[in-house]
Length: 194
Image (cartoon, rainbow, N blue to C red; front, side, top):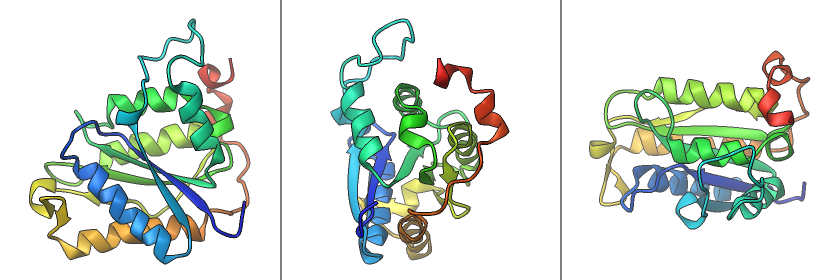
């Protein structure tokens, strides 16, 4: 890792008016406040067909995405909550990735919901990251009731905005944390090691 941690923020939303994208940009403000360098990886910019393990792992833009993730010192994952979990586009991006991109890397989590707190989306992302032996920050950020918390691309709720900025600061603080031992989940993660 360099003196200036490079943080990749992956936007798991394809909407033009994405609150997830706005929130990740707010988190990247926190990254810069703490002396890090942030980059938004907008999944709209990658051609990622549904993952097929029998097809070439380098399908479409998969090689570009995995390179961008490997080059990051830490990762922020952001997703809207869909049906109690995270988005399919983020799932596809993670499916193309694996231990090379996530193992021993600090990951911060952010979820957005039109309703109440998107806890299940955050829990599902945390489980997936643990299965890849990433170190997931205890601090996580959520934007509940997103239609009132963010209007016209701007946060209207300063408490939520501050929590999101803090996520960016925390990911820089812990970008170089010592790796944890492998988790039990990762030892059962057959799909990632085949």
